[in-house]
Image (cartoon, rainbow, N blue to C red; front, top):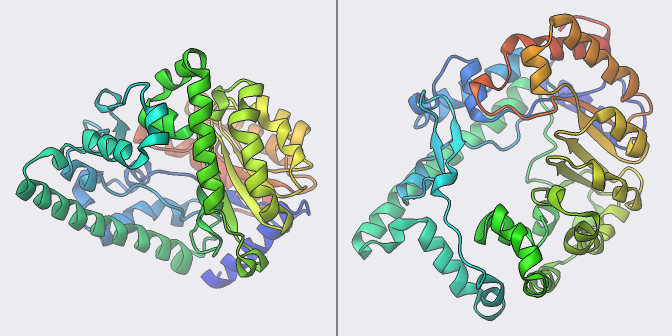
Length: 399
């Protein structure tokens, strides 16, 4: 099929299903990081990182050979920019085939951040940046050279990412729901909640969650301050609001650890205040329900119907279907452990159950329950079985 025709058909299927109409074909999506994609092609990351063409061709091999309709979204293509600045929070695996979070290299600040983010935010963030990028602490000439090297590496990474997107779109005919070309204001893409600043950056997960008990008033004041700044930047551009098919993204990270009351206080009430106008204008908001998200999922029945697209991570998709499947689009499927440990028939049976129970009425996109990061996350044979079965069930034919 012509790539443009295939992409147009997938887009129409997505339009239908996210509005809870049954599409002609249930589209499939595969979230793979570069390490797994390169492994599929038999290539090591460290061997191709400086060659955008080779990297992109190898990474997209899985997209060409596995029946996937939605993809081509952002993926990390290089660690060299960060390493040039002395930042080793992410490092290569020992076999050079992927990357891992090097948590031993994480550097966080003390509880003074809750006061400082109000009184001297610029100074605080500068101090944090220098601490995690030691090149900035070197003599000026060395620091400048490090920045130059990082910029050169980032240029190569940008070229690689752009080429991946181009191949997926123009050569394979994949439709992307995750692009940056939807023309909406910046807040529409990246609203994560103010607590994320402390959880994921300044304090780290363990200390930030402890701070909720030890310094509740300081945490509240700091989050309230940041939220007021967020609101001040929000502009509902009239032309952007009229666009027919933009997708937003609101990344979930700490929220699955919140109690229901904390979730409302630190995330949901602010999310609704900012995002409700765009949802009421017909926009679709893309959310990653990371971790154990089910305890919060019912709250999204308060959003306009068919405005939310929720990727499930660890939760039971069939339970999620019962609770919000008539209201929100779900992106879900078999988890990596089934692909690793299950038989071919067990994988096929689970995929069939997904189509039998999740697809009726629209609001469903087939995808793995976990993203693929490194080579051993899931065997190729299990993934191919899952996606070929999904293709047969959605089209009545072989992939």
